[in-house]
Length: 211
Image 1 (cartoon, rainbow, N blue to C red):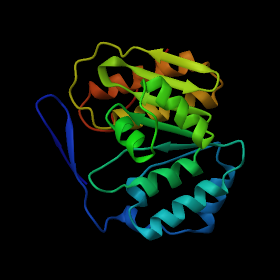
Image 2 (image 1 turned 180 degrees about the horizontal axis):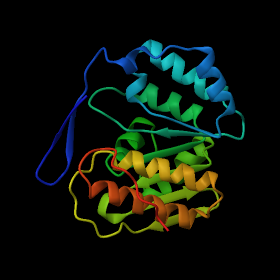
Image 3 (image 1 turned 90 degrees about the horizontal axis):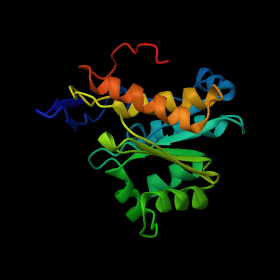
Image 4 (image 1 turned 120 degrees about the vertical axis):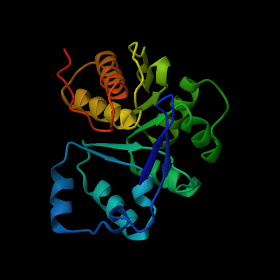
């Protein structure tokens, strides 16, 4: 994958075909890891090839009923369609997407028009999701479940490089949930981690401890 960063720190992507993620094999090691996992996260890009798609779906299906199965939508170029989105949402029990992806998902999944909260609630209801998370850049993030909706502002941040911020948010979100934190606190911490990543060069800077 080749990433170009513009003057505002925003990325564009050139996805290489025939990369390692196109050939993820199913192995006993993958099966054992899936069976003991408390959470598994998967997206669209690694499902572009038939081999990796089969392995990912088999791994998600192998998780325990109580495990979090989070679909991080992560749309890139032309490596997705309505079928892939619907099948992935059917496998998941949580979803994370950004404000640019929500209109695309809404169109391809035939969601009703409405506010982001209404569309996320419809996603949860239609696919039986426990949680839907929407990241909105400088406007913070929104979490929606059958129990309610939670908004968190984004910390003021000098943007250097936004690559990796969405993945950082997803990781912090799942870690907070697994630690038993409230969704208000989880949302706030995930925003703080994502904002820190945006303030640093590179997609995977060392993450300091957040109080």
